[in-house]
Length: 218
Image (cartoon, rainbow, N blue to C red):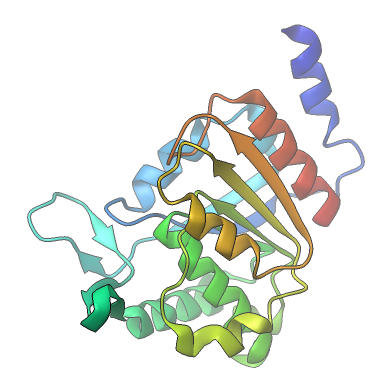
């Protein structure tokens, strides 16, 4: 209703002038243009204040048009998975932050969320190589996957104190990964919805809580 929309707009009261630059990473099987269209469906209070930048993952998925991925999962013994290609993706994102940053924050959906967690960790560990030496102020994780390479656990620890927003759903088959990603961080805000493995663009509570989180941390 009108009162909710007015309240939603008021969440930005007192927010710093200028748009918040957010680096946005799509999920597996998607691309930057898809994520851009998703975020355009959020209320105007979000788009008026956020300047999103979209990066395309470097690896196409065979047989699927415009479907990209940040890394490939490789089956290993015992039913586990290794990954391949993640180092190229990390370098691509790092170069993007240097060429187009500095960014205020990072956002990731699904596999892009797993990459966002690693970017937060590596950029805190070696800040001079990332984002013009400026740390990301917060992270947004939408139906996030969990980065599957345990050798990055130490790097992920460097991001523990970064404030993070986590969009989760009990109907998401990847919920355990989303919860495990949230457990990497100490200062978290969880938003729960009933829409499964997606960005709940039509859920006003999600939009309100996301906007409120951004206004507090930027």
